[in-house]
Image (spheres, rainbow, N blue to C red):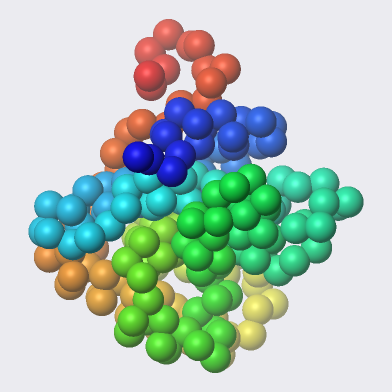
Length: 199
């Protein structure tokens, strides 16, 4: 039985009334993650698709929570994991907790990069390949550098090196090259009734 259907995940995100740019990023991450999960299954790796898809779609919800919400006061990723647990979706917490790029600077990141759960790797990597569209790791980091020009270059270098390690390890396990990564188009806002909108 699925933990959270695609449609339920979409409606849960929509209930938080995200702005369009947020919706597009969440959709891109979820669709890249869904493609990666499908690829993992194709090569015989055990991966729970509903965990990957739900966690990827909801990975940034702590950014939408009102200031009075206890989870909003936690570090990014931790807040999403706490909120998901309160929604009865604790299984999605690990992938949400590990997705922020800053987690790659954590003391336990080298161990996670060697032995982390596949679902967590997929969601974290999908977030590093998706802005509002699928981009390369280099493009994604260039975007972060533009948004945070005063960030310590040594920290940025460490984060990029570890993101590249994640990319190498995950792509090797999936038997693909980074340039082969795609999106599975399945996320559509419930109120999107435009002609030709994805269904």
